[in-house]
Image: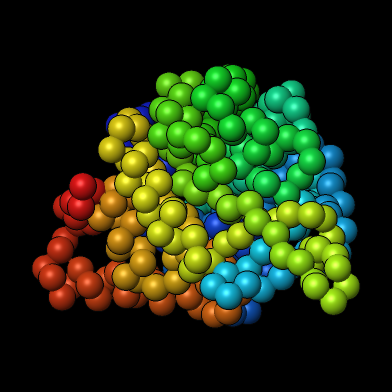
Length: 302
């Protein structure tokens, strides 16, 4: 399948299921539990210009139907990623999409430029939606103008296919999606986590190491599904659906709402094989209903 079939930078995926950034490490940490070669792609954790230490502990708190995280984009930096990870990515047998982030537009640009042409990297995912950093991340994704400026700058810095991951913590995500598409994004990923918090009443303190974190898991699926549907109706590039996907039925809902592919995150924490189960479940559904191509049901529910 093509993620962007009408675009010269189109990205070919063997199937529509991939991990969400930040939930699958650098694509190698689950190697003993998951056959990575069966995935549609691998999406790495965020990579920045220099190493980031991330946020103070504790960084995770389980909620009624999901989890709050405040990792803060801890990572090894772009030079170590190119030196130590790219040679491994080249051997995985599936496209590797590197998520990139920064404190400033120029940092995104430098990371994108450094990754351009590196063997083993098939595409970039631009993170303008992380709610867990004090600078950068989501601040670039809260308005169409800011999102378009950053997208345009990164587009000029790389020849790789460009996916822009958007935040649900905005007033009009469809307008932002249209803006980044016009600025050069080849696809958009909808959505990242919802901003939330939790309090320990006995300690009279926040549960996380900072006041807020990002909520993921089944609790956010209805929000993500609504936003994918809203964006897919009007944006002229493929949409990757993300948020609360745990089963093949969940994934099919996103495809019927207009998604070309899906990302799985929190479900992998509870069942490392959730993505391969979803792939098998989609295949079973297609055989049961005589569906030869997922494009025939993409966006069928409007």
